[in-house]
Image 1 (cartoon, one colour):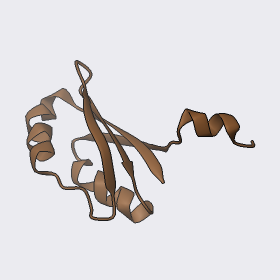
Image 2 (image 1 turned 90 degrees about the horizontal axis):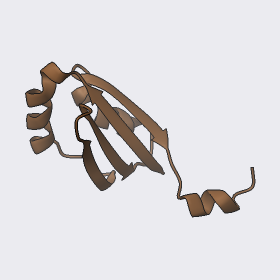
Image 3 (image 1 turned 90 degrees about the vertical axis):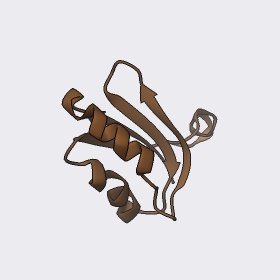
Image 4 (image 1 turned 180 degrees about the horizontal axis):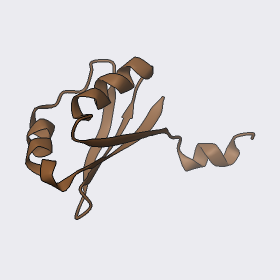
Length: 85
């Protein structure tokens, strides 16, 4: 399943978060599509495919003391347009 994660961190944690980004490895069962920083917002975004909730916990737990992770399932707009609601 496709997910979008946006992580809002406190400005005082910027250097620690940056160091963690350099070293962080996503779990083997997660397919990373892209990582982005929101310039001037003290936030990052990751788009990835993950099979289950345990994978989501593995992704968010290492950063939990530095800010708040928000995760939402996502689908391509073209698919959503044709989906039956």
